[in-house]
Length: 130
Image 1: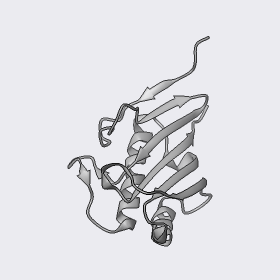
Image 2 (image 1 turned 60 degrees about the vertical axis):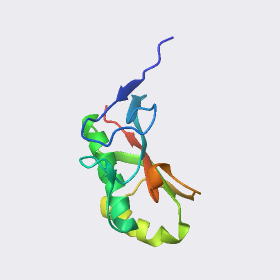
Image 3 (image 1 turned 45 degrees about the horizontal axis):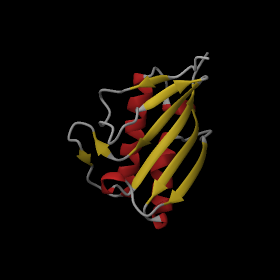
Image 4 (image 1 turned 135 degrees about the vertical axis):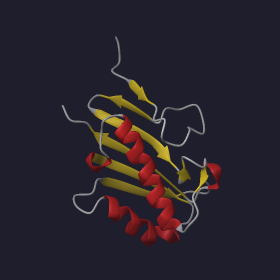
Protein backbone atom coordinates (compact mmCIF):
# COMPACT_ATOMS: atom_id res chain seq x y z
CA UNK A 1 0.00 0.00 0.00
CA UNK A 2 1.36 3.39 -1.02
CA UNK A 3 1.45 6.18 1.54
CA UNK A 4 0.59 9.77 0.59
CA UNK A 5 3.88 11.37 1.64
CA UNK A 6 5.56 14.23 -0.22
CA UNK A 7 8.75 15.74 1.25
CA UNK A 8 9.22 19.51 0.84
CA UNK A 9 12.58 21.26 0.66
CA UNK A 10 12.61 25.05 0.67
CA UNK A 11 15.68 26.51 -1.02
CA UNK A 12 15.17 29.88 0.75
CA UNK A 13 15.02 28.33 4.24
CA UNK A 14 18.05 27.45 6.36
CA UNK A 15 19.60 24.14 5.34
CA UNK A 16 18.49 21.17 7.40
CA UNK A 17 20.94 20.47 10.23
CA UNK A 18 20.46 16.72 9.85
CA UNK A 19 18.86 14.00 7.72
CA UNK A 20 15.30 15.35 7.60
CA UNK A 21 12.99 17.25 5.26
CA UNK A 22 11.90 20.82 5.93
CA UNK A 23 8.34 19.48 5.80
CA UNK A 24 6.25 16.55 4.62
CA UNK A 25 2.83 16.90 3.02
CA UNK A 26 0.48 14.02 3.89
CA UNK A 27 -3.23 13.44 4.41
CA UNK A 28 -4.32 17.06 3.99
CA UNK A 29 -1.66 18.42 6.34
CA UNK A 30 1.82 19.86 6.12
CA UNK A 31 4.09 18.66 8.94
CA UNK A 32 6.91 21.17 9.39
CA UNK A 33 10.19 20.24 11.03
CA UNK A 34 11.43 22.49 13.81
CA UNK A 35 13.10 25.72 12.79
CA UNK A 36 15.74 27.45 14.85
CA UNK A 37 16.45 31.20 14.52
CA UNK A 38 18.95 30.80 11.70
CA UNK A 39 19.22 33.56 9.13
CA UNK A 40 19.07 31.62 5.85
CA UNK A 41 21.34 34.09 4.02
CA UNK A 42 24.06 34.10 6.68
CA UNK A 43 23.64 30.48 7.79
CA UNK A 44 23.98 31.38 11.46
CA UNK A 45 21.77 32.34 14.40
CA UNK A 46 20.35 35.85 14.20
CA UNK A 47 21.39 38.51 16.68
CA UNK A 48 18.91 39.88 19.16
CA UNK A 49 16.78 38.85 22.09
CA UNK A 50 14.52 35.83 22.46
CA UNK A 51 11.69 37.77 20.83
CA UNK A 52 13.72 38.29 17.67
CA UNK A 53 14.80 34.65 17.76
CA UNK A 54 11.15 33.59 17.98
CA UNK A 55 10.24 35.83 15.03
CA UNK A 56 13.06 34.30 12.94
CA UNK A 57 11.86 30.77 13.71
CA UNK A 58 8.38 31.77 12.53
CA UNK A 59 9.70 33.53 9.42
CA UNK A 60 11.61 30.36 8.55
CA UNK A 61 8.40 28.34 9.00
CA UNK A 62 6.58 30.80 6.73
CA UNK A 63 9.25 30.26 4.07
CA UNK A 64 8.79 26.49 4.20
CA UNK A 65 5.00 26.89 4.06
CA UNK A 66 5.29 29.14 1.00
CA UNK A 67 7.46 26.56 -0.78
CA UNK A 68 4.68 24.01 -0.20
CA UNK A 69 1.97 26.43 -1.38
CA UNK A 70 0.62 26.77 2.15
CA UNK A 71 0.35 29.47 4.80
CA UNK A 72 1.51 29.47 8.40
CA UNK A 73 -1.77 31.28 9.17
CA UNK A 74 -3.45 27.88 8.61
CA UNK A 75 -1.42 26.18 11.36
CA UNK A 76 -3.49 23.88 13.55
CA UNK A 77 -0.70 23.15 16.05
CA UNK A 78 2.70 24.55 16.96
CA UNK A 79 5.33 23.21 19.31
CA UNK A 80 7.75 25.62 20.94
CA UNK A 81 10.92 24.45 22.66
CA UNK A 82 12.90 26.88 24.83
CA UNK A 83 16.07 26.47 26.84
CA UNK A 84 14.80 28.93 29.47
CA UNK A 85 11.12 28.69 30.39
CA UNK A 86 11.57 32.11 32.03
CA UNK A 87 11.41 33.59 28.51
CA UNK A 88 7.81 32.37 28.12
CA UNK A 89 6.33 35.90 28.16
CA UNK A 90 8.74 37.29 25.57
CA UNK A 91 8.21 34.27 23.31
CA UNK A 92 4.42 34.68 23.65
CA UNK A 93 4.58 38.36 22.69
CA UNK A 94 6.57 37.65 19.50
CA UNK A 95 4.45 34.60 18.66
CA UNK A 96 1.24 36.65 19.00
CA UNK A 97 2.47 38.95 16.20
CA UNK A 98 2.14 36.00 13.79
CA UNK A 99 -1.17 34.71 15.17
CA UNK A 100 -3.18 37.79 16.26
CA UNK A 101 -6.53 35.97 15.97
CA UNK A 102 -7.59 32.34 16.27
CA UNK A 103 -4.13 31.00 17.10
CA UNK A 104 -3.38 27.29 16.66
CA UNK A 105 -3.18 24.79 19.49
CA UNK A 106 0.27 24.89 21.06
CA UNK A 107 2.69 23.41 23.54
CA UNK A 108 5.68 25.18 25.04
CA UNK A 109 8.30 22.91 26.52
CA UNK A 110 11.47 23.74 28.41
CA UNK A 111 14.46 21.72 27.20
CA UNK A 112 18.09 21.36 28.24
CA UNK A 113 19.56 22.38 24.88
CA UNK A 114 18.75 22.84 21.19
CA UNK A 115 20.71 22.37 17.95
CA UNK A 116 23.27 25.03 17.02
CA UNK A 117 23.07 26.52 20.52
CA UNK A 118 19.64 28.04 19.80
CA UNK A 119 17.44 29.22 22.66
CA UNK A 120 14.16 28.50 20.83
CA UNK A 121 12.90 26.11 18.16
CA UNK A 122 9.39 25.95 16.71
CA UNK A 123 7.63 23.29 14.65
CA UNK A 124 4.12 23.29 13.18
CA UNK A 125 1.34 21.33 11.57
CA UNK A 126 -0.58 23.24 8.89
CA UNK A 127 -3.95 22.32 7.41
CA UNK A 128 -3.95 22.33 3.61
CA UNK A 129 -6.87 23.45 1.48
CA UNK A 130 -8.68 20.83 -0.56
